[in-house]
Amino acid sequence: MFLQILGVIFLVVLVVVAFYGWKIYRFVKRQAKTDTVVAMSVLPAQDMELEPAVVDEWKEKERLGFMEAELKKIGAGHTGYFCVYMGSAIVKLSIWNIKGQAMAVIYEAASEQDENTVMFFYEVACKLASGSVCVTSNPHAEYDSRPAGHIISYVQSDSILDLVKALKANIPEGGKLQKINDPKEFFLECYEDIAEWGWRAEQLTSEKTQQTLAAVGVDVNDELMSDLIEYGKKYSIEVHVNKARRRFAERSGLSASQWEKIRDKLVYINEKMGVDELISGVYDLAGELTEAQELVIEGFEHNNKELVDPISAFQLLLQSLNIKAKRLASMEKPIKTGVYMPF
Image 1 (cartoon, rainbow, N blue to C red):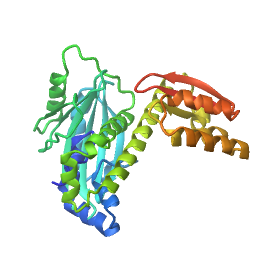
Image 2: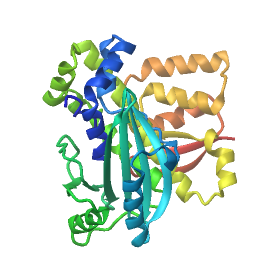
Image 3: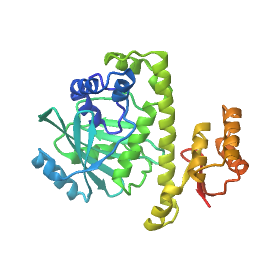
Image 4: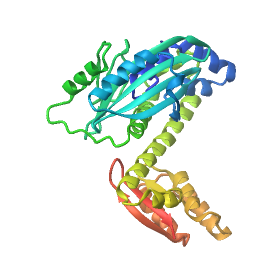
């Protein structure tokens, strides 16, 4: 069970990877020999991509049908069938929206190298206004390496409705729930929350992570750890940009067609960014720069190793480069962010 460091939001994916752990490990070792690649394979994946799937691909169709019939009884709506690849394991998902207040996920997993061994799990989840995630799951596994404040419970039952009842019982009195408009997006955002936490320096350097990496033969030296911490910082920035993009899309008041026209033109600058990210934002807004502008960029990079206020620094940089950009919005949560678009 050496892959327990994997920090996914829904516990079942952890169990799947642990169950098929040795096969996944051997698969990774055959593909690449570097410690960095092996370490990346057992740390939380920085990209969770749900691909569309169809019900005909499921093996446990009868069990799936029973669970889905139960969810229909309580008025839940089906979001769709998806699959995700975790190493050499394929995880199928059936995602349901429970009246905009919670979501249910039914999973079926198998290894590409052992398709006859199938795992079948299910769970329900919601998110408090405070940001805490509540999950009730039925796997025989506990994952204690998680951010504080999340409410995790385990209920062994053949009925997913028992998990729904347990989830309701675990919500703190007076706790306000975040509305779930799109369960797929909810799933991905929660995943990012947990994965970003797993990539923080304090988690990477923890004894538990060190033991996990050593268990799969990784030489945990200062150079490797420095690289992993840097990857973690960049991932954290990416996660906060993704959150800002979602929130801006929700609150902009734009139609779907209007949003599609501008979404790729928008640049998000937040208070966690460093010099490299600000310079990248300049190129995203301006495209190619003149030689004179390139010299200004070099000077900025040389004189600003540490940034006290990245957003203000970015605005001053745009002014010094005479780049015309419109600041469309400012956000304070989850972190301070400015949204820009070229004129």
